[in-house]
Image (cartoon, rainbow, N blue to C red):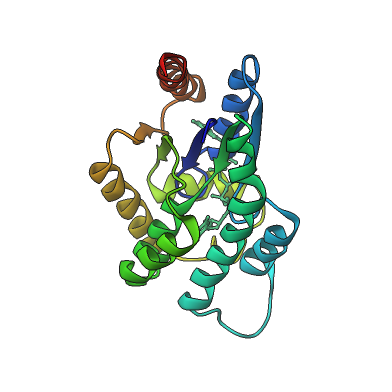
Length: 211
Ligand code: T5A
């Protein structure tokens, strides 16, 4: 595929949306950029997002149902948005992608990674970000930021321990793939984080031009 794929990850309130906007502005000067998100990214996948985050029924969603809904939306998102954009040479920037499933459903909910691996092989088929910016914050800080910004959704109502496991799982993945997943200390002031993101984007654009 000709375009470049970037994902931004982190727990609630890490600053993903803020940094995504920064990346979009930075890259748009020289590239055709598609900004998208998971869960969501297509009309159908956005409806699944609504079920995942906002539906309020007197029935607890099982970890397996949550996992499958994440991948159902992702199947639409990859086929309808990500692949066509990459094939057209565009730069795709996604607010979360598969790493989030390993972190939340794997680390947070305790789903065996074997099932996530299996779904990844079936649905994602090797579509992978060339750069993943992991914004790292302690859960207490991230949740406080997120709560100041908007009312809690279904997943945000989980306890701090859940987000501590999610964070650990993200950091564990970053250790396994340090070239792709770049961890930034997102407790720093926003302009410091933005400067670090800019440096990563400069490296990536230099690499893309050298191809
Ligand atoms: N999910 C998703 C799964 O469980 N499995 C999956 O496979 C996938 C794909 C999605 C939910 O779905 C789950 C994870 C999530 O629970 P979401 O909307 O994508 O939800 O994610 P949220 O984490 O809920 O998004 P938030 O909007 O809460 O957090 P952001 O985007 O990380 O934070 P942002 O940019 O909105 O910033 C929050 C506040 O902090 C400030 C901002 O100005 C804002 O007010 N801020 C900073 N303040 C000081 N210093 C900084 N460096 C700052 N950066 C941002």
